[in-house]
Each structure stands twice: as structure tokens, then as C-alpha cells.
Amino acid sequence: MNNNWKNHYLDNAIHHVTGTVNAWQKVLVYPDILSILFLDLNRMTVRWNVTVWGFVIMPEHFHMLIQSCKGENIKKFIHGGRRSISGRVKRFIESNNRIIADYCVKSGINTSIIFNVKTAGKLSFRFWKEKPGVFPISNEIDVQKKLDYIHNNPVRRGLVKSPEEWEYSSFNYYADGKIVGLPVGGGRQDVAKLPS
Image (cartoon, rainbow, N blue to C red):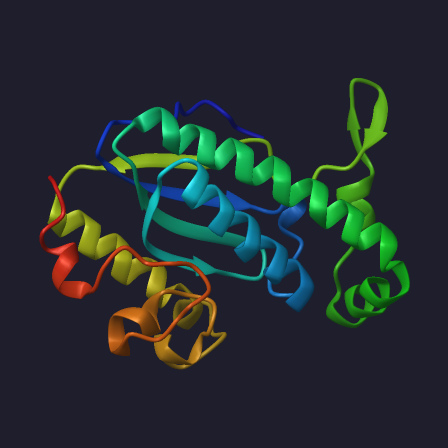
């Protein structure tokens, strides 16, 4: 795996964050795992004073546009969220082994890849790939482009025909104010007013 890039965390900037499940296993939209993801991300937004401007949860990865007055809060939000989600998912898979195992078999998911990661000579559980991508966005035009990009991700992948059909994103919040799993910082008109 190539970890040569360096993540940057800037005060007041909107950051594009991409997180990926280890070995691209498509478990994020399994209802109980999705609930864990939303619950922990909601808790972390409050704890680290982070505003979510947009998101999409794909089967094996997610994209978010987030902002905080302190860049360090973005880093803590990501690190804390990944650890908490990983631990809760591990416990869920272990305690509901038959249910999740049946789902994984039907969906072609190999959870042994997640559970049998060799680290320092030992097998361990690793839910996330080692390093998320975090990039500050410099201006409001780029924020809008990234928002459109993440909302159209399920369409490009052929999962749905239009963004409003994908229920695991902020698109329908911007389209008609629906509650979408994470508190979104403002309407489309607010995106144009974001600091550059």
C-alpha cells in the first residue's frame, strides 16, 4: 500500500475525507454497520465541534466534507471515529456471527480478510485501510465540485440512476431538506457562503 501522501489539517477549512474498508470489503451499507457508522460519526461531530457539509456512504468507502475552527479537531474526529467504529463493528461481527456470516456469504464479502491482518507477526482485526485521505479545499467552487462529485458517486458506480435514489448521502438534504443520517451544516445556499 502506498502511504506517501501527507494529510493536512487547516483551521476553518473544509476538508474532503475519504475512508476505505480494509481490502475494499463491501460491508458499510449492511444496516447494523451503517447504524454504527452514523451513531459514532454523530457523536464525534459533537465531541470535536465538526460541521458536516456533505457525505456519501458507499458499500466499501465513504467521502465527507467536514469543517472545524481548529484543524486539529478534524484530525481527532477522523482518528477517534475510525477507532470507535472499528471496535464496535468488531464486537458486532463477533456477537452476531451467524447473521453477518450469512449476509457476507450472500454478498461475496470475505470478513476473514478483515480479521486476519498480519501486524507485527500477529493476526489482528483491521476494519479500515491504514490511512484515510484528508485534503483541505481552497475555495467555494471546489467545495461545490466535491459536493457534486460525492453525491454522484453511486450513479457513476451504477448503484442507482440518480443521486436522490441513494439513501446514504447528503444529497436529499440539499434537494429537499430531508434528514439524512448525519446533521448537515446548512443548505445549498450556505455552501456558497463558506469561507475560502
